[in-house]
View 1: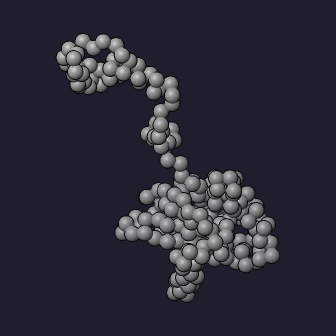
View 2: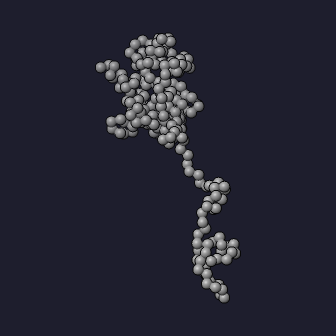
Length: 218
């Protein structure tokens, strides 16, 4: 019962930053957190989840987070059912693709995360121990056990592509000069009616090119 109350309290604490994003103040959280906007796999409703960024990579950009409630976390199951959620980091938002980190990469991320936050190492170990259900001591073996129990997921801006795998590009607004010249050679000029000038023979019709070039029209 006490554990259930603690989990409820933690969920409320983690949900508090959602209001900062709703108030357009997500920039205050910088690259420390992200807002994941996903679709409920059962209800189809939009869900909002704030996750701590364990490692932010400017190339992409790409943000690595941990599923503290394991592979059965609601948000993780939601994006597996409905991929390409919306991600908000600071003041930028994008449609994201996600991937699971392998063991070696995940261990490196956890190691770097602990090194950058060495001053709160006891708090981190206590928190990891709570989510894992066993005492986490920060050793290499413990880190490997951690990443196999709590998956790490990386979010990166999704690339829209066609079925053939090539990137979708907007249609060109204008044709190159060579294409226009080719079209003008292959496309016959439209036929237009011509009026009979006084004192000349009756003209039944002709083409715009012939009329403007001064050639006789038959």
